[in-house]
Amino acid sequence: MRQYLYEEEEPNPELNMRRRLTIATAEDNIPDDIEELPPLDDEEYSEEEIEIEEEIEVEMSDIEESDDNVAINASYMPETFEQLSAMYRSKMETKTEPKAESKFERKPQSEPEPEPEHEPDPDPEPTTATDIYVEYEDGDIEDYEHDEIDEEEISDEEEDEISDVDDAELMSRLEAKYGRLPAKEFESDPDSDDPSWTQIKPKNPTGAKAEEVADDLFEQELHKANAEMINENPAKALRAFNILTHTYAHKPTAHLSRAQALERMADTRRSNQLLQEAIESYKRYLAFGELITNQSEFRIASERCIQHLRFLGHTHQVFSIHELLIERYPDEAQLRNQLSLSYLMSNNLAKVQHVAGETLKRWPNNSVAQLHFGLAVKQLTGDYARALPYLEFAIQSQEAGTQEAYFYLALGETLQRLGRHTEAWQLHQSGVDKKFFLSVHQRSLYNEPGLKAKPFWQLTETGIAPQLEQLQHNWRAIRNEALSLLNKHGNFQPEAEHLRDTGNWQQYELFSQGKRLHANCQRAPITCALLAKLPAFTTCHRGQVKFSAMQALTHVWPHCGPTNCRLRAHLTLLAPEPHLTSLRVADQQRTWKAGELFIFDDSFEHEVWHNGTQLRLVLILDFWHPDLSESQRRNLSPI
Image (tube, rainbow, N blue to C red):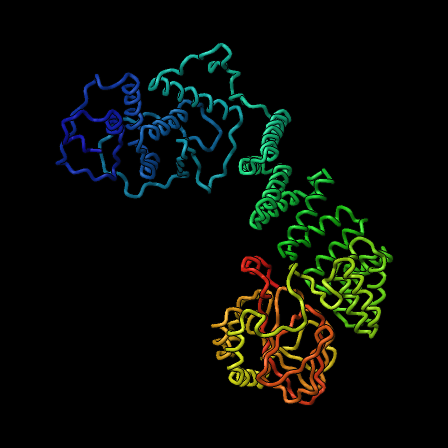
């Protein structure tokens, strides 16, 4: 603040004002040897400033002789013109008002007679109230009494009068410093001097009118975005829909339209990423719930979202959407059947049985519900006799939702396991006629057309004979490692696909769907080190590499593998009783001999018997069908 004393240039007017209005108190220790500041010329003062200074000098003489005011000044030191002016104004109001009943006012003091100067009392009598000044961001200052004093409310009339005086004085000061506000530019502009002009009138429409305008704008933008889709400009359309969902996030139609656009783009570009974005937009639309009044749109969006989630394998995300549909349409059995189907696809058989059972209580002759209930009973309990009538009723009904390859496969297995082989054969032939199966023996569900099909293959037909031979050369080291694992409890796990009829059949996986199982491979370092050099077996994401241990007196039901895209090799590690063990593939049989290797297509029906008394141990290796191209192998989904 004092920097200008040492410079030749003229000081800033604001600094001059602050210097003139800065008040020193008795507590300030000011050295005597400080150079006295030169007085300012009267020409540098404005008339208003001179008047204010004269009034302040009178007030300061009163303040110096008042113990209370000394306490106030000791607790509050104004630093700016605005703060000082506000404090001065509060004192003037106290003086000019008549003797009030309010406890907030101080009694005016008579002008004191001159007294000889003396030292102030070191322990002045405590005042009954202390003013606390609180400065806010807008410059207003509020005055609070001490908490011990009971506050009395100022009447509305007094408060209005004070507010009016403050506003008038503030306006006069502002006009003196900055000049009057400019006159209105147009006759239609509101007059600032008009006392009725109390607030700025909004220029935009409000209420129902504003909502109507916003709806019209939204419909126009939505029409433009849809026009881009019709004109086959998906990139422009998507940008437009992105803006719509951002600007009109409260509009369900914006999210629905974006989902439909992304859906079309995903189909055109065959992009799962775009499809996932479409799903997210569908979810945002469905989240509006009861706010969506278009029943047809809501149902179609729900069903499309479920369909896409199933396609991507995200079946765990569809259940809440099913519940929304059932809540909105509680009397439609079809929606409950779709829920139980989703549970079936996620292999939650307990939920399948529960939902289908509840559906049958209301609709006992519903074929789809009977089908789902029978499947759950078959898989959960193995009670084929109980499951059979539900499955037969559904398949024979020929109703929509019952004519799928998986359901024919399940009924055929049930008939076989009940010993009704002729009926099973007839059912499988019916499945071939419906194009569900490749043949009566080859009943895999995930197939590529045009691949060579036969039960057993020669080593030279595989296209990977050197890799198979390398493994075969190391069969003893592999056997020893497998036996070491088998001797430790907990390594091998029971077969989990309900394929075993009798006996004991265990497995130990090393690779699954083309992925290394690190924990298991750490316990089998020799075998996994060999496999690491043989990519034919470690990159087949529609297969496995595993040890298979079958104990005596074990029978495995007839069954088919899931796909015709792979072949399966058995490297025999231990088979002491080859004449008592056999593998049937379609209508051909083989047995196992230690150190030997054979290859078969497990998409054909196959069945195993072990009628001996000792362990049979093999290494099972799946690899791609040699007729598949590299592109097909990369793009096939894992199984």
